[in-house]
Length: 112
Image 1 (cartoon, rainbow, N blue to C red):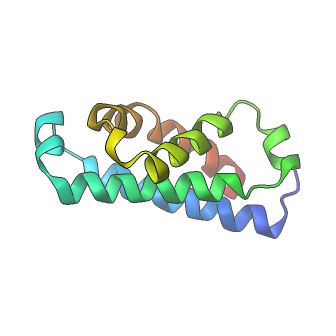
Image 2 (cartoon, helix red, strand yellow; image 1 turned 60 degrees about the vertical axis):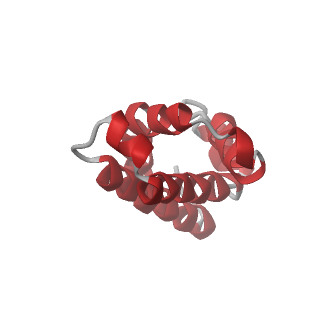
């Protein structure tokens, strides 16, 4: 699939944010994550970046990559951005630990 330059730029942003998240959570357990406000905010910020970049990908790219849950990714961004009091630390942790590595791999396929 031939990518538009705009899509490549947004995918690069997603790729870099995923790498940052994985670095932020490397070798820590949930308890430490939940107690470390700066680390939590850093992960939340990168999830915002991922969701915002995903929201700007072309409809064509999104349609051709249906195996990537773009709507869920954008939805997570919206929750973080707008539901300040409702952000659950557990949800952020699970997203970071269970989904970011797979997203990184998926995005990397299109950047090679």
